[in-house]
Amino acid sequence: MRTAFDTNVLIRFFITDDPAQSEIARLELEGAERLILSITALCEFVWVLGRRYKVPKSEIAEKLRILIEVDKAEFDRRAVEAGLEIMAAGGDFADGVIAFQARDQDAELLVSFDRGAVKRLKTLGQNARLAGTADT
Image (tube, rainbow, N blue to C red; front, side):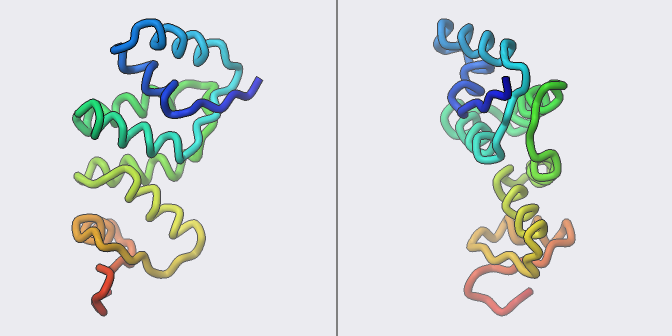
């Protein structure tokens, strides 16, 4: 069966502050024929690990790679790789996903209030500008 997993199941697989739920998460993930990992759940996974559990970005990227390297995982590989690329440059996973989806939907410009994201995106060749400015 193709089974989609909510963020909280993915978190419990890696974070063992509730051993019973961690074991259930492991059994659910191992028991699924196909793991459907939505980009929304993966963005939330990264955010929760970083904000709630204070996991460093390098460890978050490692955990994310563990999830996506499972043979039975189905996800938007290009979006995830874009998110990981921005994370490696010091940015937020979601910013990379947003930028990827903008390009994928033929957006010619990405506008944000996040100075750091705009700078990183420009460095990576994306047409981006700070909201409220004319600079592109």
